[in-house]
Length: 361
Ligand SMILES: Cc1ncc(COP(=O)(O)O)c(C=O)c1O
Image (cartoon, rainbow, N blue to C red; front, side, top):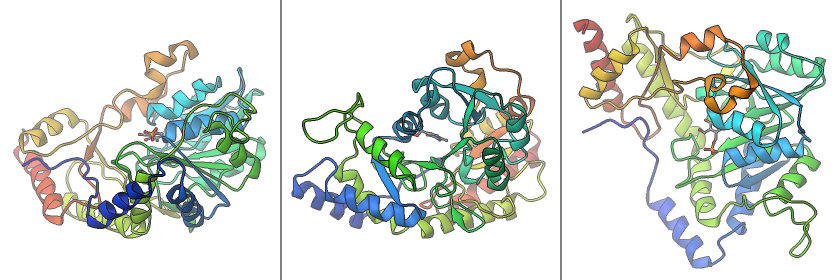
């Protein structure tokens, strides 16, 4: 039996909620979506939540709502999922790639060094569930009058100094992709903000730029969310803190079990509540370890082997060398974690990793 990298939750309570939404015969942006938006805003500590079809869609809508135009530069970590970058490009902005700090997230010093007269905003990504150093990033944004968009796709429920991620920037964006901390059974995402105008513009953009049924104020797109997914997600939102506690307990179990091995382990940044969307270790022997674990039936991943600034799709921006990012992507390895993994599974992974280092294979 393979131990999967992630195991999305499925149970009777979720199934009942989906069946009830089916019976209601109202499938797009109906009562479950409206309630889910209210609950998400309350959970995050923001005034508005705008559901959409994915985090990529949410990021794109937000860049449009923030007025990104050709030539505008947006500071973004190179070490992120490519959609963060893609949305900037789709909104016709220019991504300016920032190197990683010791915690694999955006290095505020490198970000500061890359500010020019064309810089309009900064996009910290709470990667792997670990909050970015928000004090430093907020200070940078204030000093240079930049907007701040938190990419929280991997960090639902994470917090910085007691505040939930997504509530500290002008806008936050969530993903509900099935492996995420708050998953749905397909694609989904959400924009959270205290800004009335950004929220209204995103609502309009997700539904063909509509002001009402017959009037289109601008060209938007179909980026709507749906009732079946919202019904299941509402069940899971009530459990999100408990699911994150379980991820944290698994991370602590890994830390105890893997201690003393020649392996860099993730830890929690001071002032942060890490929600361990991914459990990422690092070793120069990464490829051999991954192959060994595969033989032992343990699925692993690399998030991400090709850093964003080295993707062929963005070659035209001629990104500079980013030493830390380029080194870390050669060594990182993601081990299985999710709220639905058992302790026995985590112990099995620990045992296999130990065996690898004991045997010096
Ligand atoms: C950091 C980050 N941003 C954005 C996205 C895009 O999310 P979605 O798949 O919901 O469009 C992802 C998805 O993997 C992500 O990890």
